[in-house]
Image (cartoon, rainbow, N blue to C red; front, side):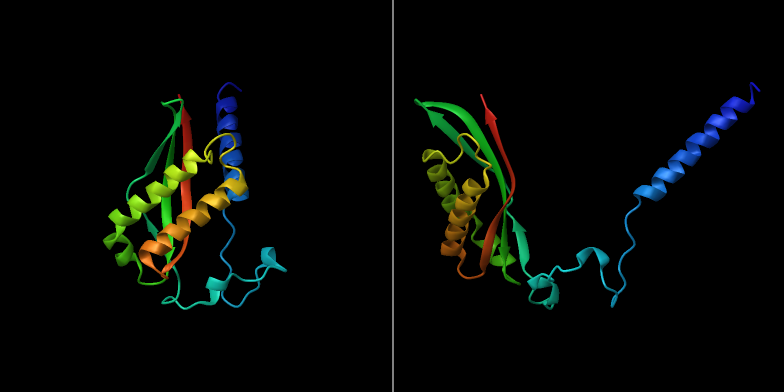
Length: 161
């Protein structure tokens, strides 16, 4: 009995691990031509039917943006953002070629947003982020032209002192 208990515990543990692995494994990929049962009633995305040449490219800007929040002539918080830009196919090189000008214009827009109180309170509120994204997209389109579809906020954090 003394030697049987450890063996029994090992078998129970292995069985539980195997069961959990089978239960938590990812769903099998859907073969071409089969309907996706989880997507019933959902229209396919626009880009799903586009040829690879028409698919947008996502360009991650190389460094984060750091925006100080100032109250009564003192820095009270810092907002740190990471941004990506959705551009038409082939637009990546232009983004990197004009990145210094683009970063300058984006940083100015972020400072304006901070100075109008956009990063105070619940700064991650959907309405605040929509305003910020639209402003950043406008700036990117002014610098890069019509290749810009939108600016994506990939990370945002506020560090209070």
